[in-house]
Length: 393
Ligand code: ADP
Ligand code: MG
Image 1 (cartoon, rainbow, N blue to C red):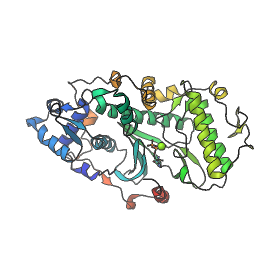
Image 2: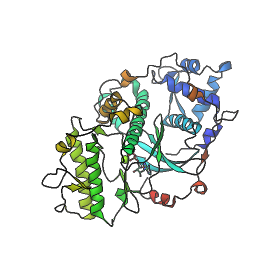
Image 3: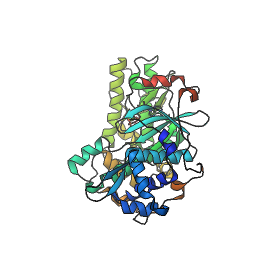
Image 4: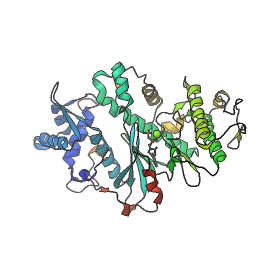
């Protein structure tokens, strides 16, 4: 995917006002009727139509006149709203190249004014699985657009909340910097996805560290649920960082045992195949602590989870609620049968654009947001960036 942020510079305050109006309208409408956009944006002199045309030209909106004349946001339109908000907050100042493309996300480099490079993850829940789910059940009926917006935003909030909570408890995760809409900003991991690593100096040590993480997560009441060589990063000193948290579940989940065993199995399988490891020598001493294991050396879920200390308070601190967790869990398991609108923020047709959404503090009088395309010249001290190129896209 191409993310041409140069365009951001040429979008005016009015453009963003109308884009925000469409976003608000989408809380209740798949396609937001023109009159509603006009009413929410309330531009002087009825300038909304000209602006809509401009936004359409830049593919930030999609026009639909099948039932009535209206608009919806495109992914790009939603990306721009999040990026603009974060740039205005001073979180970063430029967007660089894409460093990762997952099933349900796009990851880009971003950099601050002083050249610190971070990672920006744009969640795209619904890109793959949502379509599959929709075709099977048509469960969201007319609300499909609202739902990708809503679910992507929830997934981002969840990822941010978990990353922050895990970081506070000393887990090796990226530093969670900020979050807006479907976008999470985190520190850039200096390393490579484990799947790209062909050789290790100390495979046993790395193995124990990684299995130790699965165990320690469960001790904190959590299961990663996608704990594999794609979501583990490893650097030149064989230090491990785990990433990708939107699918995590609690050890009290009804399928917890299965998810836990599956995460463990992924690790065992990868080390067996890639590093030719056998596990006879595996002890019950994982990562320096005693852990109950079965005869094959695999950690035993029930004995670990029974004393789990939950991170609910830390998660709630980021604004991620138990209810949010239920919604994401149901969706990720493909079992969301009820309309997600019950958790709607309830912004009706009388919506107004908030301070931050309409903010122009950091803007020129023309309303343009200062953002530049990140180039090699403003990347400092991150030589290994290029390594991420291999096998990414
Ligand atoms: P998905 O949920 O789509 O799988 P991930 O969070 O796993 O997304 O990210 C996809 C890829 O992007 C990763 O495999 C990794 O290569 C890269 N990536 C993600 N986060 C970071 C980060 N903080 N630093 C460096 N690379 C990252
Ligand atoms: Mg991943």
